[in-house]
Amino acid sequence: MKRSAPRGPLVSVIVPHFDDLVNLDRCLGALESQTIARDRFEIIVADNGSSCGRSAVEATIKRRARLVSVSERGAGPARNGGAESARGQLLAFIDSDCVADSKWLEEGLAALAESDFIGGRVVVSVADERRMTPTEAFETVFAFDFERYITQKGFTGSGNLFVPAKVFKAVGGFRTAVSEDVDWSRRATALGFRLGYAPRAVVSHPARRDWSELRRKWMRINRETYGLMRQSPGGRLKWAGRTLLLPASALVHAPRVLRSSRLHGSRDRAGALAVLFLSRMWRFGDGLKLAIGAG
Image (cartoon, rainbow, N blue to C red; front, side):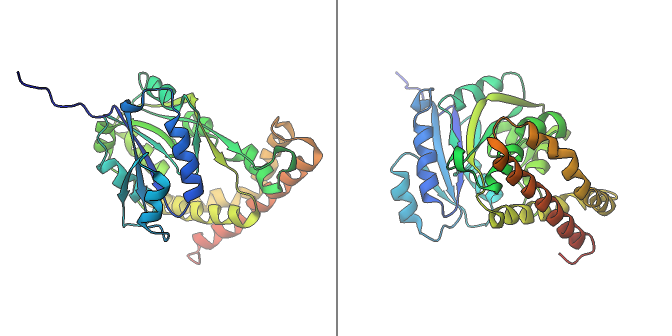
């Protein structure tokens, strides 16, 4: 009697990684505790040339995942490398510093029945809710608002993304030197694929703790967003116009700080407001440098 070939996993969970072994261990631990059967999904850690070396990454993985080495630098290429080696019919992307809720995979897969690709919800975690730094307070209010990204801006972040492998192949991989999440989502929707939001597919992401971490984040985002925007007609003018509005936008968004239920007391709100105005003024100056070609 002819035996049927063994079936592969339904889902391939792809985790890009670079020099973050502590958080990678936590991420994998949460993935091991998912509510769906363990034989229904595989985990692929796409390491981006960590300085600690392959053996250290393997020791952290402890056979919980399959390790793939990706030489091209960047989270996008790492995700692409993981996707290329995936055996699942569906792909689930999560970052190595994120912790998935136990029902993350279950809820994400269920949401794919309604859309061609979906983004889940990201909650911001802090070291101590009672002693937030000003930057943590700011991030708690403004960071990782996937619902707004998806329902108002038409893109999803790649740190909580579910997509069938055939759709990912049709769209192509993440590109570098541009805002990869926005670019990939726009290419997908341009092909007619429908984007949905899955609020019950939840992962947590740690807040940046200080201004230097937040500034590095915005320096990267500014350059990636500018790289994508300048490819469109009139993109440089649109960038300049958006940049000029940044100082005023701090006033527009200040009520979100005052209304936030995540902040406790005047200290947290004052800190979040201070970082809001500081970050918008810094982005204003950096955006002007990019617009005139000095960034």
